[in-house]
Image (cartoon, rainbow, N blue to C red):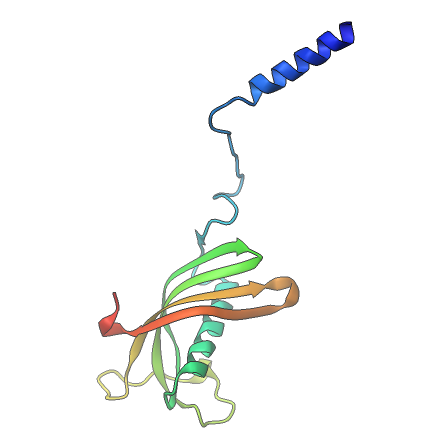
Length: 150
């Protein structure tokens, strides 16, 4: 009988302890898992995501010139099945033409200000990285000319 009494007491105490209306959640390193969080625009992985996003834009664009990032307005990281980067970027037209073989965006200057060819877009990109597969791809983007941006 003593064993049954102790077992019943344990169950009652367990039920009492778990009857809190809002459970206490403690995350030692910041926000809850899965929630987008701001990250440094200088982060190496963010820079790789920006480059991936820019390549995606260039591949979909019919423009004769390459574009590259001229500013990173916002960068967030979300842990999903991998890492999703949520980016707000300004991209501007460079002087490098797409028909040039082996063009290196890092060495391409922007079109001069006040030139008829100078153009800037403000873009929202989502880039998904799967580090264990060593892949990174753009899953979504929307770009508008900077004078039409929300």
